[in-house]
Image (tube, rainbow, N blue to C red; front, side, top):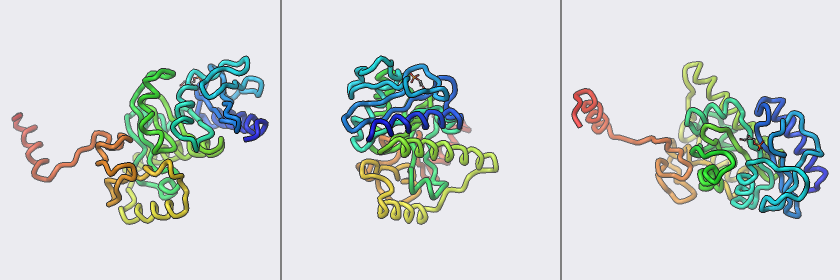
Length: 269
Ligand code: 13P
């Protein structure tokens, strides 16, 4: 990508993140990989609403500084995404309030409630909590990155990535919009999931149209319990899946449920 264009887009996206309240204060970070492998990144501890071009940090793919700006403290997380997903050239991390509310509540965004989201983003898993800027966070995210284009980070925020800055930003925006609609519909009495046959049709349309790249074929996994589809990454049961989308869910037969409830009522072990 042309460096001048990348610098312009990075600045525009920083300003949009702030204007849309996806970040406040010095929250969030954005990066883009240039054709020659260098990374342009937001500097640490800088308000994205007041970002100017001279503040952009430049590093190599190992995070070594190539100019006089100190890149984001979370650059390692961006570099991990570039390593795990060679198709990804831009990363956007923010704390959008509705998406982050899911992350704080310990919930993935994986309910099949919106057709467009199944087509363009798929489910967004929740990475376990890890201290920001440390290996803990990278370790929690690593197994999920290959199979998804956006992740929630428990008690922290969200990250989305794509083949360019606008795709990364758009995915972050879809994540936030979906989370907002999910919360609003719950306030109206509860959302209704799309039925399994509708989900399967959408996934077929998505695969045929190539809306999601090969690298992210596990996007259906949050919906697997609703359909007869199997996991494209290894056919594991949802509760066992690397996305964590089982969310601690278990399935019981009616008899097992009755037995469990009667034990709870009678105090039997
Ligand atoms: P940086 O200012 O170092 O990029 O960190 C911001 C942030 O969002 C931490 O989660």
